[in-house]
Image (cartoon, rainbow, N blue to C red; front, side, top):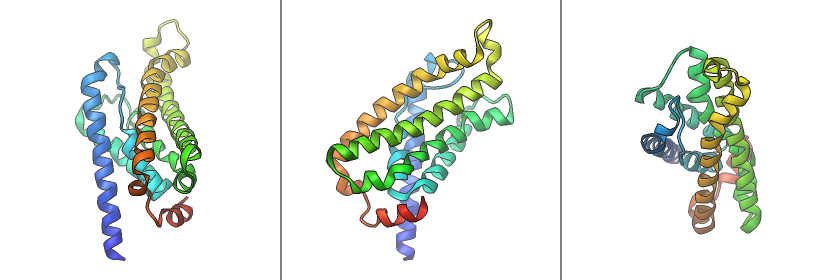
Length: 195
């Protein structure tokens, strides 16, 4: 029992660290295109695996911790609420992919892939919403005469949508080839209890 808890904690820590590293590297290579933050990143991949394996709450907490780790690497902070909507919260809501964790874990083939794409789309939509709200509330001065909602959506949507598409393609390949390793045998019971 204690051994399985330790294993779970180690796996979650590795997946969160991997999400952080992948996102950090992405910000170096594609972050220059978005001067006020954002990059095309594969951080959704380890966070989705985490939430599919251990459920909604573990995915939410893992994403939140990953967002907090970003604060250690040069976050652009102008207000405490903006800090929340730009860093921990957008990655925490990626854990919402866990809403369909049971379906991803129990179905196979095309059905599994459909559930995977829908689950990550839901999570990415909430991530986008967090960034758009932050942009409207705290960065609307850069919109000039434009509607701040449209300005924020146009700024944030390209990198969130691109991250979603690329990450979900990678997840599709991983789950088609390595689903026996990615899905815990007991995960269906755990996910049902947690979510």
